[in-house]
Image 1 (cartoon, rainbow, N blue to C red):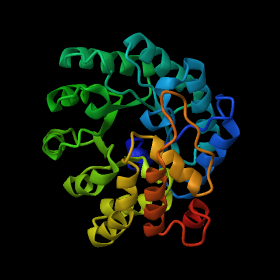
Image 2: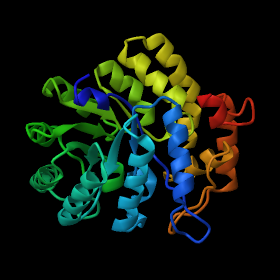
Image 3: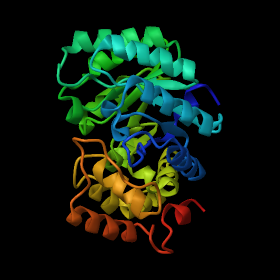
Length: 307
């Protein structure tokens, strides 16, 4: 297996666990990460969008990356989320993640400031130079209000340690353009659960998932089947998970997915404001979707799914 091939497959944007007093619940985080690994995924992704990283301090983010590295124990790769608006902070986070033992870092397109394409290039270039380990670009316009254009992505792909892209634009035309023109060793991972299978059919290399917090086994199996070209069985798993994927989008991520994890017997869903618990109607929809996905059949949720 080449170094970059270890990043093919399924990564999971880990939800962050908080104690009653609002501090990090590191033990619950480690236990959740262990359950995810038992589900057969290839990567843990701490401190990304689903991990509520924008509400955490620099020190807290580094601490969670260290926990993920310790739990992974080289069984799976750790791709550390290092998103920041300020390039200097992203550079510092990249170095700290490297020193904490992460296998790769995941800088996201800066939000609110909406830099132009040259600004995005310089941001990611600075992070790659500082990180000295594998870098995945993360394009999620729905969060950042700015889109990393294919030409900029392919320009960044020429940097030696920029290994790939997590693409969450929701634009299959853009995805197709990147896949058609990418270097042979440049990986493209879906950042959208619902579009993972179509992207795999176009030649993508995997998924960085939200729903895998709840259904790691089925998600990882779906992605592996897609990578193997067994789209009949991959479609069956995709449709099995589809209602749950959509239920997780009922309110802003990660509000529903954290509640879903709790309903499956995982860590208590606690949020840092301004995020708040889901509406009762969202919880009801999650319960229904978890049942349709087969995760509540034996009443033990994730424990059943990864057994």
